[in-house]
Length: 413
Image 1 (spheres, rainbow, N blue to C red):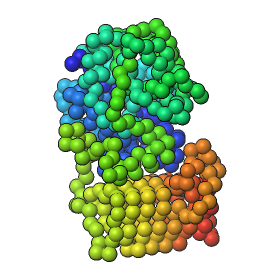
Image 2 (image 1 turned 30 degrees about the vertical axis):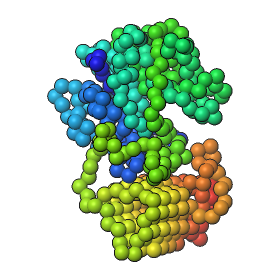
Image 3 (image 1 turned 90 degrees about the vertical axis):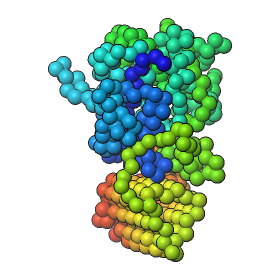
Image 4 (image 1 turned 60 degrees about the vertical axis):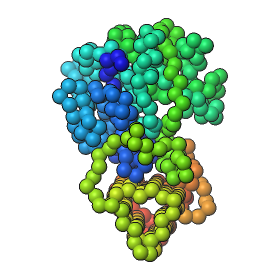
């Protein structure tokens, strides 16, 4: 396998995830109970035999840095290669903040130049998938390509969310269009690119373009040796609230498309020292995923619970994603909610209530499918009734809520 430097782009602010990314980057958002989104890219690297990994951060990186540490869960705490965290800082010329994906790599070109590698594998830190990168790298080497990009088939209705690729009979990419309204191809870029090292250095030094998808790839595919690698496995872009919710609940299928129990392709993560889940004598749990440290004394149906979640007697959690250490007090009811870490839902509160599907007034394009979001460490007072498409900002306290205890659908607190 060709010598490769992996660079994971994990610095985006991802506003489409609403309150979930108000205080963290998308790569650090919990997923599937015990994992963080970036765990999938990192695990794919080490399972593919790639141990020279740099993670490029910028927006709200504290929780991501704390999660990654020195890379020990992924066997990346190494003297040679291993894990590097690359965060922007002021420069003598007055620069610092990165304006896009290409700008982020350009800012760290000195790291690329210093590495004794032949190729640079660029990955997004915000996708959920299992992929062996070795066939992709082998294709790149066989074709003597300047760029090889991973692509997969998508529904034409989703083309506006992706970069769309047209591929010739020889596998060469002849066109790239970023997020078109109408597409003449059903192949989408996965945001996974292998560049020949010197080609990438020369490219970024010759232009001040800030983003690969919007600015550089349409020109690269016309003027360089660019090939496509067609990936057939599971892959999910969880960059919207609805996509994130659906990807979590898809794990509850009888035969989920994403198998987290595969011993041949383990998804590694930081494992906290917590006891096993406790299910009380009067509890009812149906078709749900419970993580270590959960204590359930009420009812949980069709939901995903992260470590340390407490569901008190009489409480009902239905079709929801509840993140770490949230507490659902007695007789509270959650229906189609995403509850962030450290949230406390007061006794008798009802979150996600009624049939009124009024879109969120502040972000109607992002929150319009009936989901209700409660941000990090918010405290919902007892007896509060909250409708649908509601966003509760992080750290909201009881005095932030209306005196009558009713939050209508489409509101933001």
